[in-house]
Image (cartoon, rainbow, N blue to C red):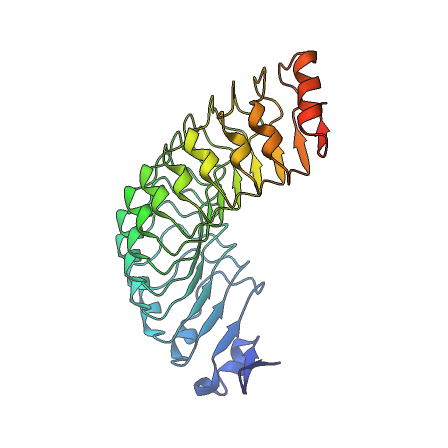
Length: 309
């Protein structure tokens, strides 16, 4: 099968045997679902290899000599049984996409920070307990997925990922995120749901490009006032927390379209909510809102679909 890239046709090899017949022409090798229990050493012969797909096999390790694949741009080894990565993986200087999801990784090598061309790093569904400080060297990263791991904290250096647009952290054991996260000025989507968060950084409002934030299933009692400065925010999912109140100026979120606040401890909403003119739906189920407050909310958000139950 050929795929067109620019003005050239690049052949995709789905068989190691066929690839070995013309090793110099192998740029894309896709060996997913081939029940491989060991990394085939023959792959290391393909000096022009740019994309290597090995997902959903039975691999337990990646060899040190993977560093031989100097032209590799994309490496997907998700859905295997990998416990550790060789430090030599950091010698893949042209790597732009690295996906290691659904493995048994417990840690990353400190050398991971040398992959400075990396744009996407997928680590979800592993057993990672902490991230090395060198992660902050990946300054070209625009998507970082670390959901469903065992993280209890994030290194301050995460704030150096200034080109990050999507950060996914759900399903960990985080009680807070570092203040440096407020330096991620290009962030569009932030997912920190299903953790143990008790607070949000006070300067969260600096994330002026943020459009979606998922905070549900945490332990938040309140949101910082600067939350109201998230001028691009369209979706705020904050159900199943312990919220007792919202910031007074919540109505300043003039682009907000969806607001999920069900299963909290709210007894009132600020009067400024009438300023949420683009709000299409709001969920207020299972709060402690008295009937008189519900009437006020109905009037203030007459243009919005309100879910009370």
